[in-house]
Image 1 (tube, helix red, strand yellow):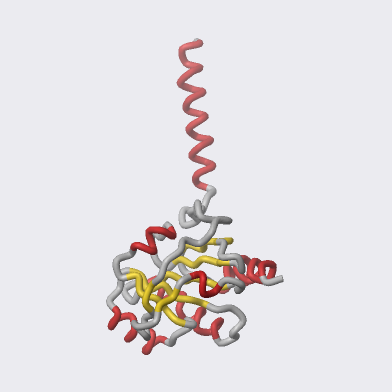
Image 2 (cartoon, one colour; image 1 turned 180 degrees about the vertical axis):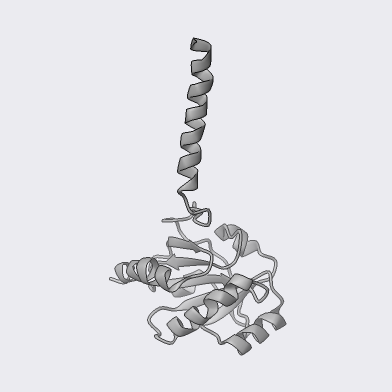
Length: 174
């Protein structure tokens, strides 16, 4: 009888782990960079290749870093919301154009609208690697001290903007 108890207990442990795993959102991958300084970089701007941007340029402001690409279908899904939100002017949004062709990115923004204060070009994806990007779109909330306070994986929705991002931005802006 005892020899059946060990496999039965192992089975129940596996069932518990499976049940816990099924309750989690597979898109919600926690960032190891949360509450740590945003990785430093210097990249050329999309619209003006002779101008560079570094996160240190926005120290003292709360801002969003939105990772996007013209080839990204989900980016097209969230883009109208970003355009609409950017018109309020309440929060700077910097675009990180990820592994894209400069001409394609410019054409995409010209056709769909440009919600960004500016976009920078991460053609080889090295900055994306530093930020732990594993798919686009991804959005980071960065505080006044240059610390990453939130990573949103996937397209931003009206609900995630209203319930997660904006309350956090309001708290960080105090």
